[in-house]
Image (cartoon, rainbow, N blue to C red; front, side):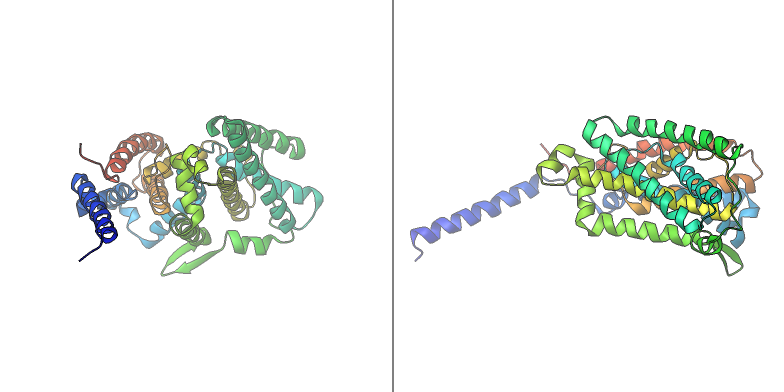
Length: 362
C-alpha cells in the first residue's frame, strides 16, 4: 500500500509526463529532408555545385588544377575577411569599413616604415594595433550610442577612404605606396603572409591555408564555446541576451575587433604579395564580404548562420570572378551576378530559417 505522500508524488510525475506527451503531440516534427534543408549552408552548397558544373561545361580553361588553384586564391582573399564579417553579422551588426580598412593597414605599414627607414615588422605590429583600435571604436560607439552599426561604420568608411588618399598623396606625392621589397623584414613577412608552394602541379598561395584555418577556428568558436553561444544570443535579441547575463558590450566590441584583425591580415597579404598598392583600393570590397556571408546562409537580421556557409559563399564569388575570364566573357557581368545572387540568397535564407524552427500546431 502506498501512503498519501507517495501517491501525491506519483500523481505529480504522471502529470508531468502526460504534459510532456501532450506538448509532443502538438509539436510538428520535421523529416530528415527538411532538417537537412534547414542547414544554413545547404543553399550555398547547391549553388556552388551548380555554378561549378556550369563553368566546367562553358569554360574549358577552367578544367585544370592550375585554374582551380587560382579560384581558391581569389576565394581566400575574399574569404578571410568574410569569416569575421560573418561572425559579426550573426551577432546582428554590419561593418562597411572593412574593405578600406584592409588598405589603411597596408598604407600605415608601408609608409611608416619607408619614411622612417625601420624594420617592416615594427610597422606590421603598429598597423595591427591601428586596425584593432578602429574595430574597438566601431564596436564601442555602436553599443554605447545605440546608433546602427551601418551608420557608424559608414562614417569610418569615409574617414579611412579620405585618409588613405589624402595622407598617401601628402607624404609620397602620389596615390601609390612606396615599394618595400628591399627593406628589413620583408622576406620573413612575405613567408608568413604571401608564401607560395607547389602541390601536384598547382601553385598554392598560403592565404588558402590561412583561410581554411580561420574558417575552422570560427566554426569551433561558434559551435563549441560559450562565446559562440553569446554571439548567437546577441544576434537573436540583445535585450534577452543582456537579461540572461551575456556581456553584450564585450561580445560586440570583440566581433568588430575580429573583423579589424582579419582586415589587417588580408592587408598584410596584399602588401607582401605585390610590394606596393593603390591608395584607393578596397572601395566596394565591403559589399563583397557582406554578399558572400549572405549567400553562405547568414541572415541579415542576425542570430543565424555558420562559418562553413560563409566559406562556400566566398568560394562561389572567387569561382565566378575567375571563370568569367576563363569563359571569355565580359568581367563587368560579375557585378550583375552579385546582385542576382544577393536577392536569391535572401529569399532562400528566409525559407531555410522557417524550416529550421519547430512550429507548434494550434
